[in-house]
Length: 64
Image 1 (cartoon, rainbow, N blue to C red):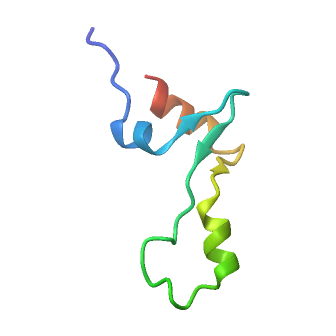
Image 2: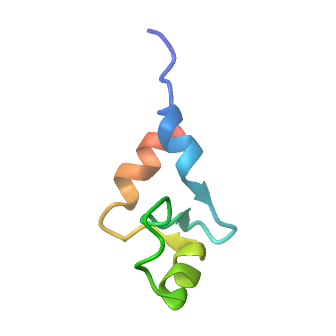
């Protein structure tokens, strides 16, 4: 049986933190930035974590 391959798009988007959580970047910072407030853009630059309900699915995608 061939080796299982990880999903390369997911590997590029998600990183494991030292405590085992899965880090992700926020969306909505690519364009149309003039109507977004400074506070909102600043908060979108910060990394977030994957929601607990999605963790098993993302872990499976990045670890195969």
